[in-house]
Length: 362
Image (cartoon, rainbow, N blue to C red):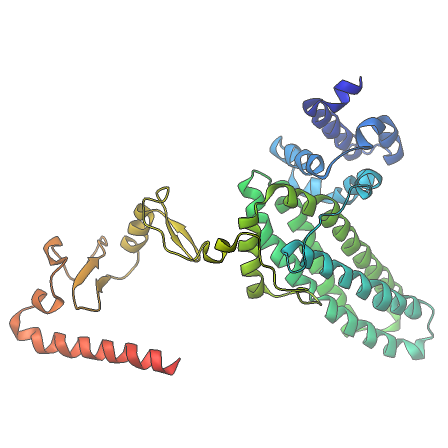
């Protein structure tokens, strides 16, 4: 039996059956007892793979999302025993963890005490407390940067490895947290004593939901990402973090990967023999894709280089001016009638002057 429990296919089937029982309304303790041998050493990767398999087999994402906290709770004891990812200061994982500690501190030391104070306050003291609570809730909106980096920088790399579960389920829960934050801010902004219990309940629901998300990130998402992503991929995430920003705290240090040549990765434009792609700082395209993009723009494009030589023109369906391929490599002045030469020269001078002016203005 022990060999069967260690069989990956058997374990995945059992985990899916476990979750299906929960979705059918079975008692959590009953389910935990039935699957205790599987649960006791479940891994983060298995939980991610299990949720993804359920979605691929037809379970609506919304249904998985609805009970994702229950999923995490049933595996909580086993997952808490797993070691946390060890990331050096400045590494994206290290920054995610530092942000989570700052979020927890804001929740536990600032927001929860204010909720308790509000719950036990007299009507004449409520306004002052809710104003303080509103201030802390506004600070909590910084969690948007944490979620946005996770969704827009980390999820795409996991998806490259076929791991879609977190992006489909966790992103939906992030959106629920965002919506709850907005709603709580609006309620606090128009607070009156009649909605006191509602404010208390909604704030604590939000606090618990954010703390559950922290658990799922640190015990399921981040360990899976640490296992899958290469140093090159972490470095690409690291280089893009500043564009989105950070939540409550800044990175602890500048992160320099062991491979010094990473400084150049993703920056140089490769030729089209590099696996059929041309690499840009913001992505990769095949030559055919570039051609299709230019040919479907609602404008004609002709590129003339710094030496006034025609190097390219787009082949849009409805051209304003026809261009034979023989213009490629010719001086642009020679592509027009002699009578137009002075006009062409004037236009070139204006364009070059504008370019110099633009450079100087920077």
